[in-house]
Length: 165
Image (cartoon, rainbow, N blue to C red; front, top):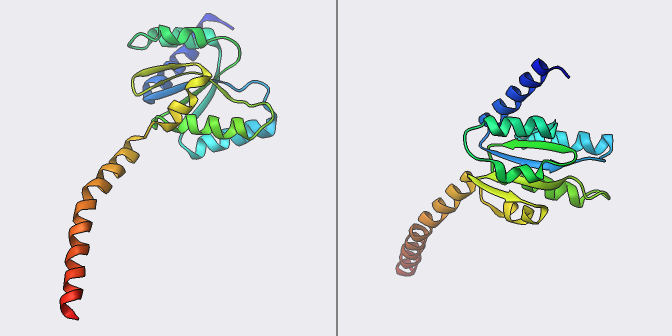
């Protein structure tokens, strides 16, 4: 591959990293064509971009990106799939779902950058899957705010029903 081609690919990877707030580095090697199609389809449905990248090109893109991503360099060995998402836990849930659903146990998590934190190793998958997304947190806060109002309204309704009897 020519140097010019490599620099174009590095810039494309960097643009993807800048467009999405979270990214996962996974190993999806050895998946059958059907499983690969299934995971790509699931990624598309969950707004996760899946790209197979060369480790050296991804490392160069991370070096160009603002911030220190050196903690992730140890995960850049072997076949690498880059999963880009604006929802922090979506790729983790996909990886978990698909690795349980096939004999190979793939894809596996190598590392991730989520909510400005670094997660290295497959043992971090459960932690990442349990992180709540922004929309989930907003829903929890709304439910907490509505709870006292519901209690007051149901109390008033019960009192009104009792007085009507």
